Length: 143
Image (cartoon, rainbow, N blue to C red; front, side, top):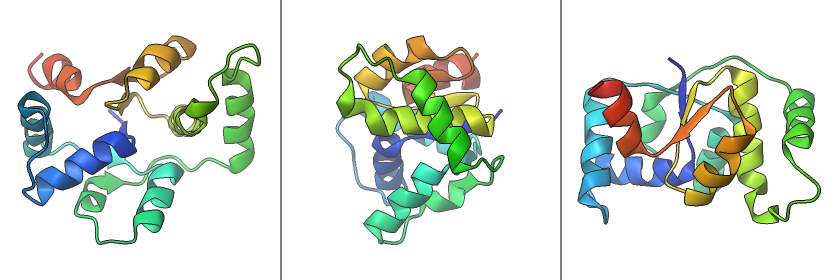
């Protein structure tokens, strides 16, 4: 199963790997369980941009592997299809891009902690499941 994590999960994932506590014990336990399960994530173009912007050494990068290459045109085309011009979701542009990258790369699950990503964008795709790490653990690791 191809899985991707957005920057909200990436930050928390990194904190766990560096042994820095995060706010939610439930979320922390879920991320630790994901790490222990040996789950590897798909490295999307947005993840690469995130690492380049933040420039510090990331332990989490070791958990991200290659996924199907997609060209910028495919991503832009899919973003255009996803965005409804009647909706005012300008603050979700990065999430639309991330979703388009995930769909075009064959990702099946996106992990996020952003409620608006889950609530607003999950309705726009039937190719990718968008969920919190805790939900992923309950559904896929504990089954």
